[in-house]
Each structure stands twice: as structure tokens, then as C-alpha cells.
Amino acid sequence: MAEETPMKEDVILILDFGGQYCHLIGRRVREFKVYSEVVPFDLAPEEIEALDSRFNVKGIILSGGPLSVYGENAPRCNQRILDRGIPILGLCYGHQLIAHIFGGKVQSGAKREYGVTYATISKPVGVLKGLSNREKVWMSHGDTVYDLPAEYETLAYTENCPVAAFRHRERPIYGLQWHPEVVHTENGGRMLKNFVFEVCNCKPSWVMEKFVQNAIDEVKRIVKDDKCILALSGGVDSSTAAVLATKAIGRKLTAVFVDHGFMRIGEPEFVERTFKKFGMTLVHVRVRERFLAKLKGVTDPELKRRLIGEEFVRVFEEVAREVKADYLIQGTIYPDRIESGFKKHTEKIKTHHNVAGLPSKVGFKKIIEPLAGLYKDEVRKVAEKLRLPEEVVWRQPFPGPGLAVRIVGEVTQEKIDILSKADKIVTDEIEKSGLKENLWQYFAVLTDTKSTGVKGDSRAYGYVVAIRAVESREAMTASFANIQYPILEKISMRITNEIPQVIRVVYDITHKPPSTIEWE
Image 1 (cartoon, rainbow, N blue to C red):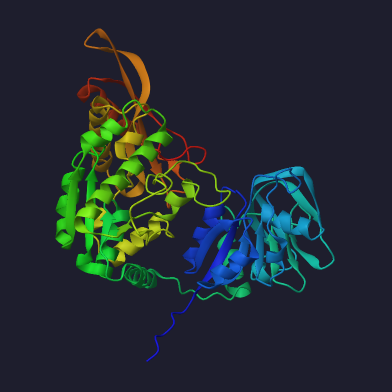
Image 2: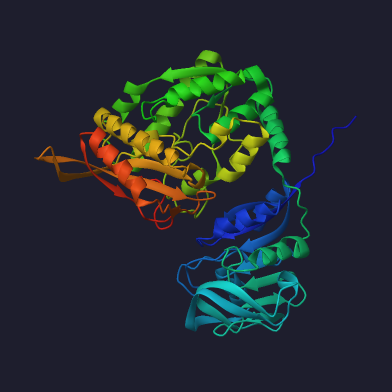
């Protein structure tokens, strides 16, 4: 009997023109149970054909971006993509770019629009189907479309923008000057849904149950009868990958926990206690002195990450030789790859040790990353489907290089001891206060600044510790947490009283962007 060919998943591609909301568009589409993939703006038509071998490419969204279409280095997509007959939706810069490519008039607006405004919908069709005459929308643009080619028609306008939405009269091409992906656009979800389902005719079939089975099948297909090791940190990403891989290849998997010495207090004990219950083979490698020696004299955060990433792989290679494993499985997720600049034209924000931090040559047939297309909240859903313990599913993210990248400057044993104690105090007080459920991450950072203080009526001179606590959904954006002063005061008093080397405690009140969640 012939093997049944699996059904291809519908996908919406998002061309990334550098807009801050690009990945938010992708998240919104996935919330409709339709798979989305963020791709470089200069994707070639041949690359779409290659994607079509794995997916049904049903539509393309052109994201916003910070540049003018007339700028010297303005990003521009391949026009042949727009001519393929695939439904297109341009947002903000993407809206302007479509108009510009086809001969419309785009120029700097007489009055720039930033923030909430109201659009008059003159033709509620296509992406605007079912909307009212007046819609609350979110604008963020300097350039404006003033006129369209004859084959296009205006669907909406605002007080300062005569062409706030348009469509091609015959082809499924649309443009919106506003951002439907942000919550400030009142019916933005309806607009994106219209595009995904009414215009692109997607099926809402991308569900976590299907993802789990496909991931298990893919690991089986790659590994066959060989053995694998898995990089296990105890966080939700690597833990989910571990359970997926165990379901796929069973006893052919060896999970490897590397104790590099940059862990939170109690972390190694937690990992051993938790994962012995899963019945998997677990190897605990204790190499604290080795990693600390590797970082001696190093202050640059990118170099720290690269050195730690390389040393991780060397340890994994050593274990692999012992157990005769050919493959390495990692819990890499989508934001790791995005921030590491894994695609053409993607800005490298910081190297993740398990992505761009890997050495160019590794002793494995292949590195397998079953979660590489998922955001953190999606990984948590998979973890729940796999029945991982709640304490693992909802663990706050912790960087692979651990406390080494929460110590600004050179890493020493003294600094590790200081920071691990401070971090434990932050964790204890946040969790005692009942704030844990509302926060994405909360931790301490040991800065490279020293400060004058007074202890015991005498002058003291010591370290400054920063506290970071943020709220987020998927870590691509985050807001600092508005923690009540009595809680911050308790944390500050405990740190300065219990850790003699610390003189001052500060609280980080910066959103992401412009900062990242981690300091380094």
C-alpha cells in the first residue's frame, strides 16, 4: 500500500522591511490557527517556489519599515512576487511601496500621523469587509500615498491621508497605511482575518496537536536508527524538545545537562530531580572551572556568548563520542534565531549561544531543532500538550550562558557568587508577592559600576545591582513591570544587607524596544 502524502500546511509569508511590528503580524496570523513565516524582504520568486514544496503559500504581507521608499537604501521587494497572482497586503511602508512600484504618487506628508486616528471607510470590501464607516486605527508614518494608478481604487482615507487604504481593481492586492496588527487599531484583527480567510482562503488547521506529531515524525525521519544527544538546560524550550525527542526515538536519546557554573542557585538539583521522572537517560557534566577559565579577561558580551557556545558544543561532542551519538538536538526557538541575525538583512541584536554562537565546524551529522519555528508562548502550548509539569512549562526564561551574560564586564567567581545570591533574593520576593503569574522575567544584573555608600557608620565602596522585571507575551517586545515600591524596597534592603559587596540597587524602567530584556 502506497504511503499517504501528508497534507501541506497553508502559510502566510511576511516580508520583513525592518518594521518594529513585523513579528507581531506573524503572531496575529498564527492566532488564527494559520502558519506564518517571517522572510527577508528581497525573497526571490524561486525561493517562494521552494517554500511551495513544503507549504501552500496562500498570501504575502509586506511589513512596515522605518525608511522612505525614496531613500537611498530603501528596501524593495522583487516585483515578480507581486505579479504571481498570490494575494498581497501591504502595511504602512508596504502600502507605500506597492503604490510606488506601480506608479502611484508617494511623498512626504504635509502632516505626519503618529498614534490613534480615525479612518473613513468609503468601500468596505476585501480586507475591510464588514467594517463601519468610521474606524479607529493606529498610524505611524511620515510618507503618504497621494494618488494611485488607474488600475487601483481608494478604499479609505483620513484627514491627512487621502489614500489610507486601497486595492487593485482586478487582482488580490491591498494596502493599508495603518497598522492592523497593534491593539490600538480597534478592528485590526478583523482586517487581518479578512485577508487571511476571505482573500487568501486559508484553512485554520495549524494547531499544536498537529505540530507535535509532525515534529515527532520529523525527528524520526532524520535520525532513523542512529543515536542522539540533547542539550538540556531545564528551561521550557529544551525540556519540550527533550520530551518530543524521547517520544520520537526513545532510548536512542541521551539528555546532557552541562553545569557550566553560571546557573541560578539550586538549578542543577532541579534539573536532575525533574528529568529523572521522565525515564530518559540523563548525563550531568560538571565543568565549572573549564568554562570560567575560558572567560578569563573577557568583557565583550558577544565574545562571551561565542566562547560559551563553542565550549558547549565541545562538551557535547565529547559526550557524543562516549555514547556513539551522531546528532545533537537543541531547544532553539524562533526569537533566538531572529535576534542572532539568522537571515539575510536581519539585524543581529545579540548572539544566542545555541545559534550564531555555535562554532563553524561541529562533530555531528546534523543539529536538529524541532522548535525552531515557534515563539515562546507557542512552545508553552506544546509543553502543555506533552504534559510537562507546570513548574517547567511556566519557568521564566533563562539565558543559556546563564549568569555570565548578566554580569557586565569580566566574569569572576566572586561576581558569580554575588549575582547568584542577588538573583535568588529577587526571585524569592517576587514570588512571595504573588507577581510571578503576571511577569515574563524577573532577575538581577551585576553592573560594572561601583558606588560609594555607608555601612556601619563607615564609608563603603561596592557594586551596583540592577533589578529587571518585564511583562511580555512572546519576548519580541516587552514592558517594564510597574512593581510597587514596598516590594522593590524589600528586595533592595535584603540585597544590601545580605550581600556585603553590594552598595546600591537600581530598578530598570526601560521597555523593549529600545532595550532588550537581558542587559547583554
